[in-house]
Length: 168
Image (cartoon, rainbow, N blue to C red):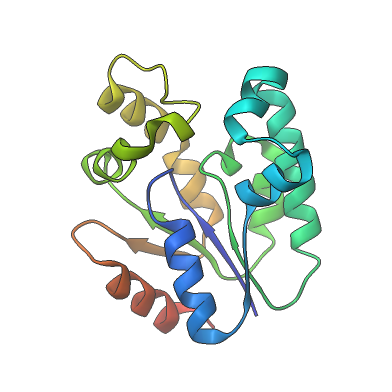
C-alpha cells in the first residue's frame, strides 16, 4: 500500500503519517526530512543558500525515488503541488489524501514553528501570507487528490480514522 499525504503546511501531514504508520506497520517518510538528510542541511538553509527553485528540483527527485517503494506512507511538503511535474506524478497515484485546513487552523498549527517555515518566516502578516499561498495552491491540491479530508475542528485521531476508512 502507498499513501501520500498532501496539503498546506501545518495541516498535520507528518503527525498523521506517523500515526498511520504505527497502526499499520508501514514505513513512513517525511519528504522534508528526507531532503534535509540528503542535503545535510535544513530546508530553511536550502532556501537561503540555493533558493526555492533548487529545492523544488530536489523535491521532485525525492518524490520519484520514494514512489518506487510499495509499502510506504509519504508526507509531502506543502508546496509539492507548485510544480507541474509533481502534479502529473501525483495524479497517477492512488491514495493521495488532501488534508484540507482553513487559514485559522493552519495559522494556529504553524505559529510555534515559524523559524522552520521559510515562506512564512519573514512575513509581516502571517494570516495574509497563508491565505495568499493557500489560495494559489488550493485547486492544485483538489485536482491531485483522490481523497479529501477536512481537518478543521478535528483531533489527530479523528483524521487518522477518516483516512483509514477512506483508503482502498
